[in-house]
Image (cartoon, helix red, strand yellow):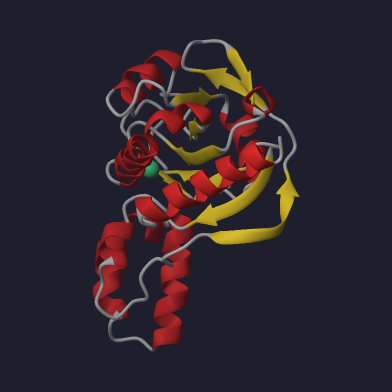
Length: 225
Ligand SMILES: [Cu+2]
């Protein structure tokens, strides 16, 4: 899978391909994740990220899971019941995609204002080896201290991710090497207050779209009371 890490040449090459082939390359890169997207999404001949999320109708029931929060305590998805949960998978050493995702999550939280406390923002690490609770806490503080970081051993996270269609793969390096990349799915997930997967967003979806969806979910929840 060297392709995952030698992406910078792809978008230029893709400009000479048929739109369909270019699109399938884009899909592949979206799955491949980290590192590839800035180039691809801004490429002149490639379809940009969809402007809105993909709504799952009906919403998909999600099995509960428990991982370790940045406080060191276990946290389950069911602990967040009653709140819309905006979730992404990634890792703190990510060079490009994850910092942008978390910066956008922070924009969304700020746009929600007082209502931000009625939603949860969750970053699930796919890199439990390096992402200790302490490291996650330190990292997330630089974006928004209210964000929830979750970490666990890669096999557990892989099982959790499978329920969201999330895939990740470690760059092959010597066991002693501390600096490695993790290719991962970059989508964002909006889970409703009942714990069901409701909307999937492509990485880079405008913050205003997600803010509007969360507001609608909160309003719906209020009217259901
Ligand atoms: Cu990342």
